[in-house]
Length: 505
Ligand code: KIV
Ligand code: ZN
Image (tube, rainbow, N blue to C red; front, side, top):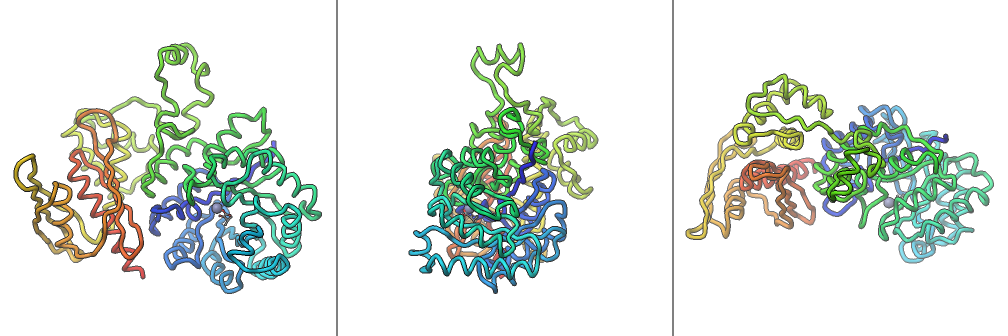
């Protein structure tokens, strides 16, 4: 079976999704997890776009050595030089040059002729080759480019030294049959194609990103680009977990394999969802909450008799925690440590102590502590490390009479204790106003959602908010059995991220 190179661009194209920005530590954490998932290439960022991206690429290069570290750059000598500075510490660096190929982009966006574009591709690929032997060239908007021109541009890129040539369906316009034919045409019409890996990169505007990617693999492409949970520009990118599982589940059809450790899929999906603040829809293939749930009597009956009646994948192969084991207030440190290990967490002693204290606190309020509760606790504890301001106390009065009032106490940057109170139109508004009186950073709340982590009246509530400041969106999350407290935590989380970003400028 041929191996497909799995190229993850969650940290680059995925992060380009509106409202999905990640800070440096979060990118590092996702990169580490992608390393565990065993993807072959991680696109770690687009270093010329921001100092934060540059730093994230540099740090990931030092730490995540098992995968190729790829950086995206414009087809511009200066941009390539800067991008190389960011990625040069990687064990396996790759420079990825993007330049559009379609007449629409050439005419409206670049105002260049086809000849000029070919010259730019040749010059910049040759320049990048001076730094690094692994060079990818992407013909942006390839699916809306005349095939003859794609053949010429890819030939020029390979002649100049590109080792991977990527055919993106940038705007999600292609149909599987048509996209497959384009890939097949590339194999037939590009004379030096055997010197490069053919890659594809599909967007999901018509919901066909995975179908187009699989069709292209069927027709000979051997690198597939995508993101975890399919996040990305507009309607997103191809979902890598779906592609990996399609290849694994249907070897009879594809005769292909990947190097991914599929048991890490679920954890990677949760992590990306937690850190970007993009929830996974319940019916999402492979990683949705309902992906392995059976409801109708007929299905449940079939499942009891033999799982393969209604399940084409074993949930264990994607790492869905199968245990129905629950912890409770009599469970000790050992039980929590074991459960965390089974869920794939390895915490430092300090982090474990914090998680254990939060677990005990939760178990006092809630009879059964499930895996989802534990995941929520760990995520909450991670969010509160290295905060500028920490929410220490929160008290509200509210109801259908009287004026909603909130009092808050924060611990500030130098350990000073700050306290204030405010009135609001509701309890959350009052909490946010009280916090604003202490942390005076102008911002606007643009999104607020509450959901429960598990079923039951005593469930943990998770709040996700987005705030905007100077045109930039910051996501905040908070979890607690009290949703007003969770809302306060989410707001502090967003404010801390805003302050970190502003400090980094
Ligand atoms: O969608 C696209 O064309 C891209 C390229 C940079 C590969 O993201
Ligand atoms: Zn893209």
